[in-house]
Length: 313
Image 1 (cartoon, rainbow, N blue to C red):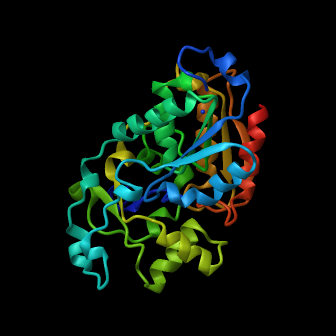
Image 2: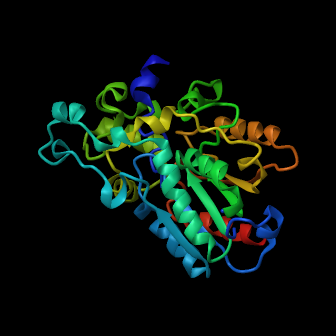
Image 3: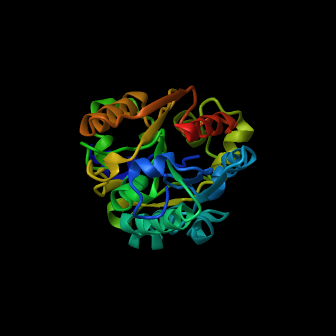
């Protein structure tokens, strides 16, 4: 797995694209009245804006929803000068990134702050997509009494497996196409995975589409690429992201399986579900499936419908 450990996890799970205030018992929180707030956490190379369609669909269904920008993403994203046209790929491979200093604890602190504020208005359903699953698990470890439900949208849910990287060393990950997307530089040296999403190279575009969005039309696929950010903190990929059965494990949770996912293969999704369920007898995943690739369906209404259906659970 040497090549994977250095470059392959690109922005493993690129893009992509939880409750009352503390002190409430889990059962009281889950059955309390009022419409929830959906808090959505993006994956590697993503940002909150990528989920605008999903947020709109949830809002039009009468719910509060927001998609979080993790530290160093969204308006705070770093775009190297060499990423601009005309590109200097040699410089791009070596240019430092402020995301190299980011640690998973920074993501956890940021999302936990959002959840705490949202929880003052009513129940919170915390949704993680792709590598965002690693973040929501750690948030749940810290503030379980603020989260009514966790939702993993074709996302990493580490329980027995320690990290996102370790998930990719398993037999269930053997078919992943994440490692076929070319990346730049050595993350063990730069502290980030860096991907040139602005490449027009046909081989790059074919690999990225196959891995992330194989059933999108070309226009939608290019729009998705243009929403992605080049850098992701390597620490998020390698850090311990396991759920604690005593805290995370007592929160009701759902998993939305994307059955066409070729970045986070279905076999790996199912392994993580099974390992989580084994760790928390009596609190198993509520499972939903949708025929969609890693970025989710091209039109987000199908995901919104599943999320809305969880409100009554």
